[in-house]
Amino acid sequence: MAHAPQIKIPATYIRGGTSKGVFFHLQDLPETAQVPGPARDALLMRVIGSPDPYGKQVDGMGAATSSTSKTVIVSKSKRPDHDVDYLFGQVSIDQPFVDWSGNCGNLSAAVGPFAISAGLVDPSRVPQNGVATVRIWQANIGKTIIGHVPITNCEVQETSDFELDGVTFPAAEVQLEFMDPAAEEEGAGGAMFPTGNVVDDLEVPGIGTLKATMINVGIPTIFVNAESIGYTGTELQDAINSDPKALAMFEAIRAYGALRMGLIKDVDEAVKRQHTPKVAFVAKPVDYVASSGKKVAAADVDLLVRALSMGRLHHAMPGTAAVAIGTAAAIPGTLVNSAAGGGERNSVHFGHPSGTLRVGAEVQQSNGEWAVKKAVMSRSARVLMEGRVCVAGDAF
Image (cartoon, rainbow, N blue to C red):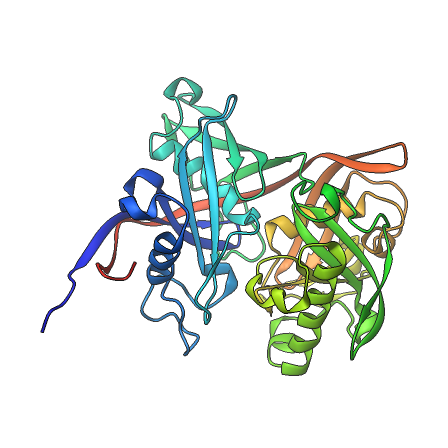
């Protein structure tokens, strides 16, 4: 019986922030997968182990969650003042598609370290000891990310004592600056608030009319108040992910919010655009116990936020959603700002299912329009495995 032997492709498996994914150098991909299209998508799905009707991704590198069903392609940048181009593919677990509509803020922390180790950054820009500044072009959304990567003896430093809630072991801190992170190519001609309002009445059939802040920063995100949908903001994953009615409600909010934001033309399109927008709910601070058993005191955070990713409650917080949270918190009148107590601020410390996170944002208002210069947060990254990933030669 004829069979197609496996091919072996150089790849690196990396944890970035509270996510992990398979990283590729563009030139290492098979020729047909070096350009966008069905061959590339088919290859990446097979690498991750999708689509999997069992929902486990046993026959691939994925781990059956939105945080671990991810791929990254990095190449030297042809753009001036940038070192590398970074393309992110969110692979659906049970459906046959790769969503290219947004960035992964967590894996952004691993792009700089990967690029340096792969020789994609000019050696003159990497100090013998200190911090290397890697200028990253985020190709999905057309934005610049600045990664500050610790270097020891001319190599990326991965181990240290920086702790990140949602990650088991400490590592070296990687600071990220998301420059001008408003998503210009999305909805309403690129407005930060595509409806023109910081709060809207969002009608969702079968659910009702909800107050919502819909913002295009970091990643398109729909914020609603926890109490308006029957929650407290202290929920952990099982409280949402084990409830089919809750998941259906959040998907309805996401679909109708996407339509209102101009991201889709018909609600039926939302099923093929799972990565964006995100939907999140916010609440004022109260004491709760995180998934690790860590006690989070109301006095230690400004507000509580829970976010869904790829149809499930995220175990911590998507990095791009954290950018949206930090920006919305800095703008008076948004639901995020109100949950945090109102007023002006340039940073916010929020509670999520795994613990807490601080993110900063520089915003300004001109002629009644809000703009964000940059958002800043710290993550970490660590190589888990490097070598070659194997896929059947007829898989793409």
